[in-house]
Image (cartoon, rainbow over all chains, first blue to last red):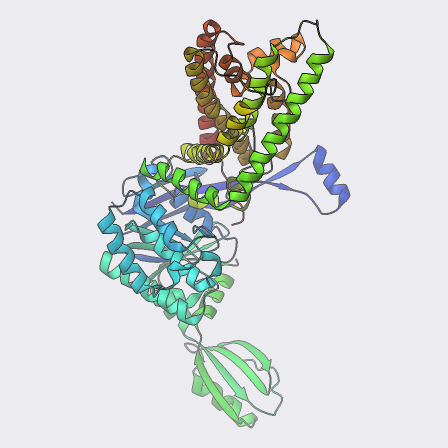
Length: 327
Length: 268
């Protein structure tokens, strides 16, 4: 039996809707119209102990809703969740001692007091033994480079510092599972790197099972071997990242600098053509059309000043995935 | 348990930061106490011979007790922390803690009431005792009355909190509950005897008030203190007061469970 089993869960929200303007407002005052939105539809997957899973999808796809159901905050409209043989919603009190959660867009730290005071409060909330608490805290603070930061009132911290403190707060009780909902949102390159290294480290050393959602594909590239793609509330892809790269990785980006005007070219394997400043940018599928053949073809007709060949980055891969699934 | 007790400590720390607020509270309560006492004295003076619904000394004591424990028995004040959490969805973090949501906030509310009452009531009581007659507050009627008063006051604080919390839980269904909250304020203040003591109300309202829980929030403890409600009646009322506490807590607990089941976390 898997560590986390999600079996056909759905979540339907009832949402009041009306058009803008006074008339519509008046109308809805007397006769409110509701629509039912399926934020998540019949989603199933399993996660094994010690895995890192990237949960991706465009805005509004149902990522956060799934995470909230996995945390026991929201009750699924239909379906079942079993984590370590517990039902997150009905066994909430017992269950949440085993999980850590970071919601990148929210804060669990008290605004006016130093983060360390919130940590102390969490020690009491989770009933952590003093020695163990000090040890864990020390370790986390060193790993996330927060020594001086935790003494300052939270309101005076930068976003990156605060986010790192949030992660400490979520891990003080040594959870076995960690849910990260956009943990790197708004962070600078250095903070992102610290957070990523840290996630890899606790996964490797403490065997923490991690599920993270993000819009930053570098996060996924660096962290997750497996991704689950969700769109419009349904799972579209569940598998390894390298498979995905192989499938879409044959796409190459070729940038040409030229003064000539290149007219429409009709050749099999050319995916797109775009005029850019001082030249053109092409995307070709190298499985169908080899790079040399393509360039040969062009260089016979036009004078090329410079040329640049690039692998498509993971962002484009995912974008293509979204396009393929029309989400 | 330790975590719940910690809220008392936190509340004390927070409240101690606001010395000026405590001082302002004390001054306001003393001012209001004096004005109320003078108004009622004038009323009694100009209606000599009319059968008043309450003995004057009992009334004065009632008024001072009302001012001294105002911070505890005030029926409703919006808890900014919880209200904001419900509105902006930060409630999500509260729900991933291994605590009972309802009791956590119950203790938090109670802690902040107790702490602010502790910082305010003593100077008011002392002043009320040293004032010259007829402004002066009286000693409890008997030791028995005093004990029942203390128990009733304790139950009153529990009742105030469970009702105030209930008014916050309503907000989980409607997002903004200011309408129902202000209505609650009006009804509670009338029937708890904080506008005028209950005996001054028309007969019909007294009858209605007797069926409602609100009188246990201040009218009952303050009147049993001076034996305006005799001890013999006081004991069964104490039990009724306890029953209301249990009922309102159960309703709150059930409603909060129900609210969480259909909870929507606002803002993604």
